[in-house]
Image (cartoon, rainbow, N blue to C red; front, top):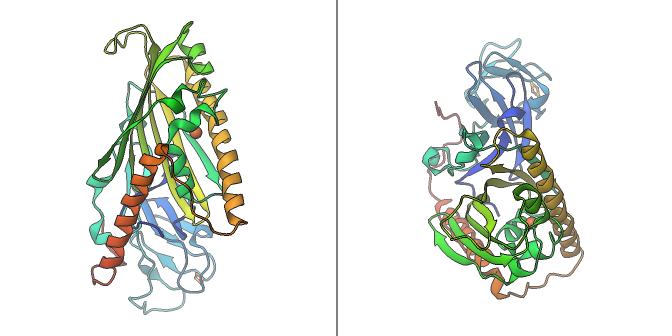
Length: 353
Ligand code: FES
Ligand SMILES: [Fe+2]
C-alpha cells in the first residue's frame, strides 16, 4: 500500500521543540519524535513494548524517554535501559528506531529498511532555508487517501475551476498542455500559460493591469513531494526578461497518516519585497484559501468513493502526469514486495549518528 524505502516529511522543525514529545502517525505507524540534548532529532516506535502504552505520554530524561505507565526507560536508539525493580534487561526489550534527518526546516523519517536509508535521497527543498526567499509555513490535515491529493497536484488544470477566483483566474490554465517527463524518482511537469488574466492575488502583488504569462515548473517525487518554481509576468515582455516577474518557489509534502488520512505540509516562498512581512502573510493567506478549496472537493470525492461500489476512473489526456506518477509508485511497491523476502531488514536498534 505504501512505499517504505523513502523519506517522508514528518514535521516542521518548530513542532519539535527541545522538550517536545511529538506523536505522529505515518503510513499507519505511530512514531514518537523528540530531540536529544544536542538538538538532533530522534524517531522511535511510540508503543512501549511492555503493555503498549504510548511513549508520547511519557517523560524525556536527557536523551532518553521514560514510559509513564510502569517506568521503563528507552534510549534514543530504542533500547530499554532501565526497568524499575528489575536488574536484568532482556536485549529484545526495545522499540524500533527509525532513521531521521532534519533538512531545511523539515524533519524527514525513513519508514523502510534502515540499512537502506540514504540521506542523499532527501529531495532538495532548498527554499525552506534560504536567505533570498521568504514564506510562512503551513499544515493541513486531510480526511482523504493521499493518492487523491497527489492526483490534484499533478494536474493543474483544476486551477481554472477549483481555484477560479483565487489561484486560477481563467480557463487558459486548463487549456495549456503541460510537458511531462519522467525523472528518477518521480515526474517533472512544466506548464506555460500565456496571455491570461492574472490571479487576483497576483494582480494585487504585482500591480499587473493587463494580461500575463505564467509558468509552473515542478518536480513531483515519491512519496509525494512537490518542489515548484513558478512565476507570473506581463505577457508583452521577452521570455528571458524577469525584471517585472513575481517569482515563487513552493515546497509541499504529502505524508499518508493512514490509508484514508493525510498530513499536508506546505509553503510558498516569494523572492520579491523580502522585507515586507505583509506580503509573506498575504501569500500564505491566499494559499490557505486555495488549499481549503482543494480539500473541500477532494474530501467530497473521497466520501463519494467510499460509499459507492468500486468503479474504474475514466482517463483523459490531462491525466498524463498523474498516471505516470502512479505507475512509478506501483513499480516501487512491486520492487519492495520482491525485496520483502530477502533478509536485509535490521529493525532495531541501528545507529544513524
Ligand atoms: S506500558 Fe510502558 S512501562 Fe508498562
Ligand atoms: Fe489546487
